[in-house]
Length: 435
Image (tube, rainbow, N blue to C red; front, side, top):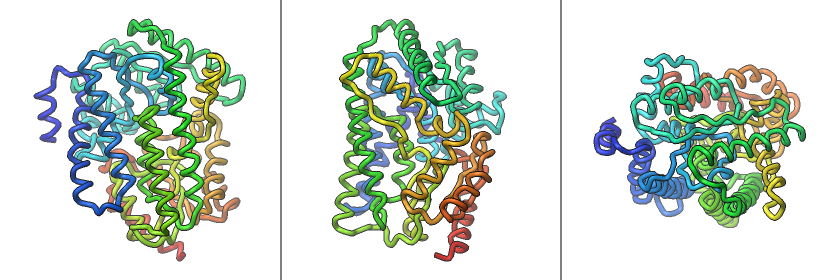
């Protein structure tokens, strides 16, 4: 809390103080990680912290240069707006949960500020954190962009910013069915969103730069597909921490940065697979998490690897169910590709439409990667996902022959269910598996 107070006092005139806090925290973490761990250990974490730190530094510098500050929802291809305009992108959910992962108190002081203001306790902490930060004058946005997805929390929380300080809010209407007709409809919505943002910030869209940004994102998707193939190996050559690292990197990194991170991770996996060395020990259990990782305690991943021999192969946010975009075609085709990606972004694909994708994707990952079990984090704010728990459990049991543990918690607030309690539940589950 002392660090937060320091930044608020020293940088009160700045627009993105939480990103400045993150940069300082990541700089300290980077030095600690590289000095504390042997060269061949925690390689994914080292890569993640370094590239996120560099991104935070760049965003802070750009904000100080006066570029427009644009807040956005995580489950949305922000490459569209990064490519078209010179802006500083601020991912609401990314900043709330990255602070939850890195700071002792996480984002909890800001959850409390939002709740004391009147925001319900049972809503999602992903947006609640930024609401609290804004009420505490730590953010100042020039515009905010979100689709009408993937959940009620999104649509209930984002309008707050327009009401509170009249921040321009651009909303793309996303249909519930995810089919070709919907793709065409949302393509038109995205085009309109680009025009609205350009008018607000006084910039013309740069569609040639958009092609360059998408080219880097296409490369990132190729690297990610290769990473996914390596995960089929037994034992898995990646530490479980890769799942929350991908969940954090996709909304915060764009284009070249994301491609660089995935390239480094891919090389780590290839070298380990070739050498047969896993610094954290034997793989006894292969798990998939149909929903979210525990973001307030990412050290739990290392504990599962070393103490339980459990690999976390995927959570909802670490697998991309969409294709790359043909950047050689006309602009209409590019926007159709972006629309298709938007409809199939993690969580939007599973939670913003009918139940089938959520169920089928859970079964697909368990089968494709030969999982022994599943663990479902029943996040307090995600009512739409909680309603499917029993159906997903039965589907995994009947189609894959594996059991699923459910843990009630808030992935960004350790006060609801403590890390110790969660670890004990997982430990008991592993004992019952008897593998």
